[in-house]
Image (cartoon, rainbow, N blue to C red; front, side):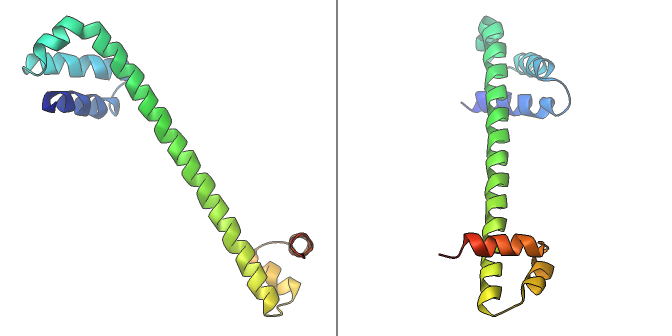
Length: 119
């Protein structure tokens, strides 16, 4: 397992320097030269290369998805905070123009918020 971790670490390192195919090939070559997973890599080189590329692409896609989900959550959080600020300013009898100035929204947006939240 330790040797496999070394192989994976090399693939990750080299992908920052070159394309994925070349990074995988270089990691395989180096591991064989250094006595890491020698028999396995020699015997299954093409399969290892294919699986490594597929796994790395999957990992990259998952990172992209997590980042997009994080950004969406961050945006939702900002929107919720703005709504709370507007709500609190209304409770404190701030004029709509002042609320718009503080929040960076237009007076029309503040009016629309008030209308949609009067229940």
